[in-house]
Length: 482
Image 1: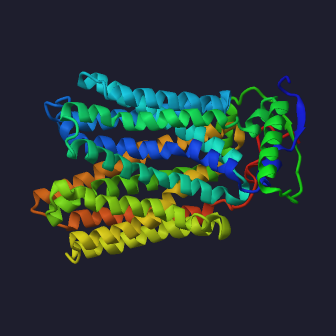
Image 2: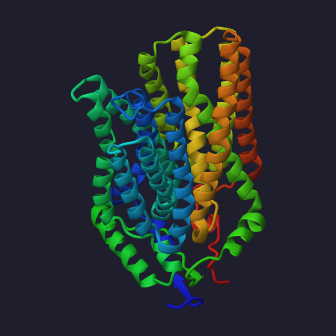
Image 3: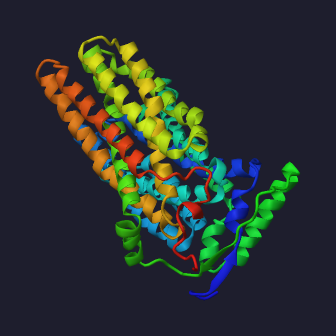
């Protein structure tokens, strides 16, 4: 069909009314692995830091090790923007094959690097694959999962980042600590963990269809109808249930692309409040995690004299708290609602951090009790962070969903993800220089907690009640024919 042609379609309504079946688990497993891989990569490289600095590795110093993390982060941002744009242009399925293929190839090649700069290149490309995955995958998942459970599914998938973190820690410990392989080979083999997982998931993704919603808006409604019809046959044969929910039809005006001028108009005018909300939520959660979680090992060493070799025992409970928060509380985001739950999780995480920071300042905590307190805080904060990604993927029109996810993910990463470690790291450095003065990190906890409360306030005033609503009801497609 040519651009401008008006069609009538019911594919969105039919997808939203489907009962939950094994087909939906295939979607979750085949697409949701992205977060596992990101968590694995971030933690794996941190765990391999010692051997990468040794002659058995690449001989990196502290600066070059940090630089490699910066290359991965830069790849995240570049991949998100580039592939986010292409996701809206070329479709979800094509891009989630490309991005995963890029990731697994670059991750494997990272283990074959023969000098630091080649290693940095492969880390950049690995990050680009993961950044692109966020745009393509979050778009596809939201457009395939029924509206009534979209919140808990998204939060549950986002939480798997921390399962990947545990996997990365365990894999590195097994390969390096067991001495099954010499160090010069073990660190190279470690990079095959993510590549191997990615290769298996690449095969599974052959069975995952293109988003019928995307197809319909691009004049391929016959393909969309066939996909939904096939899914319905699969689902109904498994459950023997026929949904009674009324099917709603929508009129769409076919388009081959969405111009940047229209996207800018949506973000800066029509949905300006939503754009502000998305930016605040993404920046604040990125600042929180990058300043508090990723410096916790340093806090344990400096103020509790924990052996560096034992840090993993303290970090695993934090990762598990992050993982189980969205898994256990995710359904409340569909039942109670987005606004009350997002407001509560952001605000409560901020308040708990300020209180816990005071207990840290007074010297009340031991290493064990501070770990327990931080695990509780991250149990709540992980729900808030996951809800930020859910919010961005829900509140913008289908035609720009991939790019919107990319833009706000990149903004959160660049603003909050970079400034958090700089601010908190500077306070930690000044504290150590002054003989371990706890007031300075406490001020960092107050600042970070206060920012989370600001995020809660932004949700309270600007949040969108999107629970159990079709994506088309949350945000009318730009191609909707009046």
